[in-house]
Length: 49
Image 1: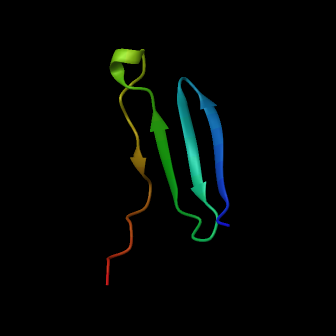
Image 2: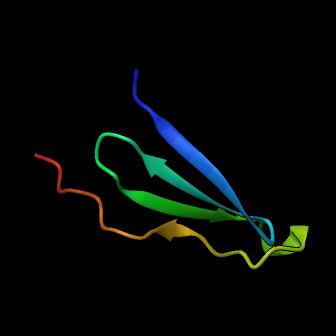
């Protein structure tokens, strides 16, 4: 089983970490739900073979 950690950072945003790779992404509420509509990977995904 893969470990994925999610931390609520406040202001309708979460930080998600993929355990094996350590890669992080942030999520945020959409603008129409009083969020900023931001989010995405902090590091690029690896190329597919």
